[in-house]
Image (cartoon, rainbow, N blue to C red; front, side, top):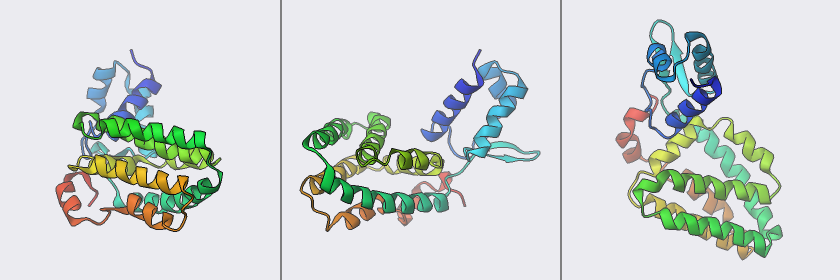
Length: 217
């Protein structure tokens, strides 16, 4: 027997990892059998997923995993870009050697799994750890927690990008370059670095065509 909280967490993880793909129907009957839970608490779970944009609910049709909304992704990229530019500039003047070593250790772990396609989820977790650590070291943890609340489309968009051949090493290299600029207190190129890191391939026709089945029309 699963609790509502456990079911909600598992379904969120399965949707974010793309184990459950956009457009898949979440049948109440199937879920009730799978998790051995009655319909009433299960509907509470589905309602919460709907409120957080993990699923779309259509009367008389059912509950469907939401397609990736590129408008939402663009808004999140805009927000993160604005925040991270200022955070990196702040870190240029306040980051200690110990802090630099902390970020470097994360990047060393990320590089170690960048060549292994089976470790994409670990790479993604380390990606989040690198960025969240910068927010924390700049005293902006609240802002990081805030943007995580509306991240369902952006996380899946990132996951798709990481499936591209050579993409993991490219992302690691950009992180390494960003850390070098912070350590050297070089603020002049930070705006361009962050813009490229977060917005690269956003309007790629090849990306849109390859993953059209995942994206909201």
